[in-house]
Amino acid sequence: MGNLDNIDFKKLASQQKSIQMKMRLLALSHFKDGHSRTQIAKFLKVSRTSVNKWVQTFLEDGLDGLQEKPRTGRPAFLNPQQREQLSLYIKNRAEDSSGGRLTGADIHTYIAEEFGKYYHPDSIYYLLNHMGFSWITSRSKHPKQSQQIQDDFKKFKIETILKIHGHMGLERVDVWFQDEARFGQQNTTTRLWAERGSRPRAVKQQQFEYAYLFGSVCPTRGIGEAMVVPWVNKEIMVEHLKQIAAVTEKGRHAVVIMDDAGWHTEDIADEFQNISVIKLPPYSPELNPIEQVWSWLRQHYLANQSFSDYEDIVSKVCSAWNSFLECSTRVSKMCSRRWIELTS
Image (tube, rainbow, N blue to C red; front, side, top):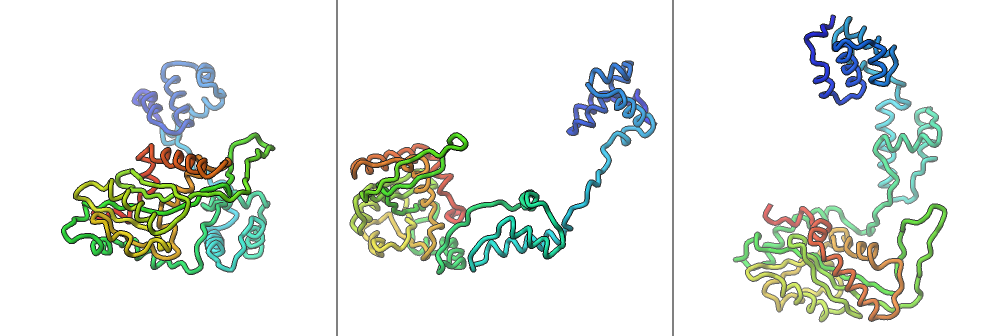
């Protein structure tokens, strides 16, 4: 039996995470203070029957009797083994190279045929969410892409050591990511907030004026360098490397990671004492985080608008790039990768 005199119900109530348990203990606190059960029901805005039940339970079984009892609930429609089989089926289909995609109807049919269970079509999506699946866009990749080659590249500390001067310690190396992107009158449109049921219209130009943005970022320092030009070639690439060389502090060395574009020749860094170039594996743009920068520029500044001429493109692209660099934390957060930490 429970003893009212030996328990501080208010203190116990303040320590509870469960609202139900807190209410029961507060009811007992009021009861201990001499309030009637009707008064307690009014204080806590509960029924008098509930107060009677809590007091009676405590007097008979003590605090243990007030604890929530396990609720069995309705048994799951699919048992754990069936859920595991369904999960494996969905994962395998997501990685299937034969094309197509699973829909809710396909999964509904699979469950019915494999397990003899019949869900309401709307309940399929609740089940998938409960199992940790979501409807997302897949990432594209080149048919010749090699995951093994990409994984080996991420161990690029050895290649970095071979590229830089022997007397230069890895703690004095800055890693940069470099790429080019084309912006122009054949612009993109994006999703935006609008009134439900409406579809705002954005200009989609048909002209062909454009410019190239040569850009590089150093995630560790949170900085970047860029130039906007009308075309691409080796000479412009060298000029861009001069920008990086100029901001590399004395006594430090810049390792610039880039793809194998035609103008990224092996000799572009020969005239620089403080720059080395490392090429990404073929068909591996996702290893270059500056690709996310191009997406950011389009999403936040350059999409859903028109450009009057080349000068207008240059002006707006420069403005967007400078806006991106205004926050060094954003540069570091968006472009940092654990595998470029040379001294860890």
